[in-house]
Image (tube, rainbow, N blue to C red; front, side, top):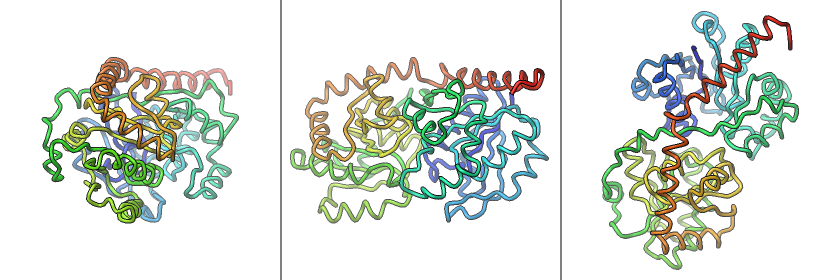
Length: 395
């Protein structure tokens, strides 16, 4: 089965979790004998990372206006016609992209099934609300209605899809939480290297955020909650591990205005072994997102044995609650965040025990090795539905 995975960017450093998941997903699919292809733009394309996806094909198209927030691939349609006509199914990652519109028309023309996997990008949220609404009015809602399947990561994701297009058939809405590459965490790094790298001692508590520095990640809330913790743990440090996505300067300004510069470190983007060194050296990993499809970074922390806390209203909060993986907190409840951070640190053996139980559950039930068939089953069902339509004329 030949699967085309489409996302405008192939760079974990630049695009974060969606690129990371797509990268790990195609590697796992290749491992079980499928034939995945990645379609992406050339903006910030990570050629070194692509070379590590052994046996996976890449279709890289010239992309325009990326810095303005639009990834326009003028030649994508002709490339599809020439090179990708034998695709069995298209897996669209995120939702409102020029790339997905071209792929939608391609799928309709050749009766190729497609699935939409928005990764939490459906809500109108704060940025480009009018533009998103206009996209949905023109074509987005139709794309959702006609998809073979629409993939949500939690019940929160299901509600987000239905809020945009209430007429999506419930039989086509599938909850499929992202699996985890547990093999990456079988041999963990030794402790202490990350602390040495950023100049911290072995005893100060570290509250760590892992991810891109964007408004939606709620790091302004995390900083204010961290200030509350400092009243009881004055030696605590807050460390941001991730690249800037438009919010770093505001966070630095907030840190300066609160006079906690000596307690906050911006460590920049890290991946692979370096990222795991950061997770294993942290005391707590905190994710205070305003919107989050699932507990991707927090569960990576759990796989490193590090306790976590996330915002309760998000898909990430649901994931954490479902397997009792850590603490949750109400968004913008600064006092509660400070108290819960202190409670975790003050009862660390208990928090650690809870984390290790969750780690065992993730390894047994949520790994790529155990769940890659869920994607294959979904693709097969989509193909069967299309074939039935072709032979019977049923719409």
